[in-house]
Image (cartoon, rainbow, N blue to C red):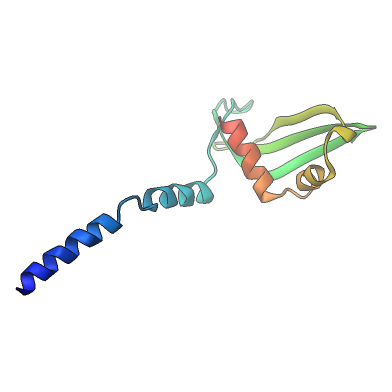
Length: 118
Ligand SMILES: [Zn+2]
């Protein structure tokens, strides 16, 4: 009698767990902890593995801007630059985006790293 009740409860629980988002959540945590490796050949040691330094460099020349994502070699630590914008007119960038570049905004660094690692 008691056994029959238990088994019907088990069936209901199993049905409720269908479609849970556990796998997705685990994936999200992984991408939060470690940014992907950027493949680029280091001019010093020829290693191809780079990681972001967390910094973005903005260089203004009159009204033209260069923006780079700074990365460093996994092996020797040499810093390299990945062009984000080259010789772009300052008016072509909206202020909010420019501020995020200048402040090394972590979300922006992450986004540029994802783009560069593709
Ligand atoms: Zn290197």
